[in-house]
Amino acid sequence: MPARPTANQIAFRYRAVDSATGITRDTAKRLAEQLGVDETQAIHRALHELAVKMLPQYEADDGPLT
Image 1 (tube, rainbow, N blue to C red):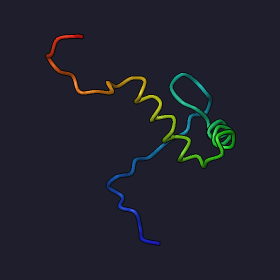
Image 2: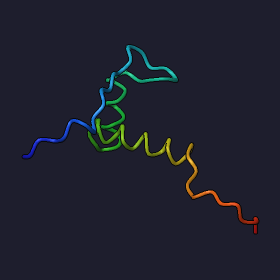
Image 3: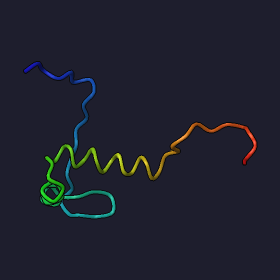
Image 4: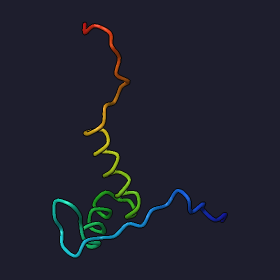
């Protein structure tokens, strides 16, 4: 298996307790198990859902509203 480039990686640190700003590894494992994926995929899914919720899903323009 080829090595992954390290330039596209970040450190991910779990929290000691679950809170509004982070989760414990135990919670991540439980979530991954519930979703039927590994921890990395669970994190990606959570970030994707947050991106869809928080970021515009279309290019803004100056055209009139219809």
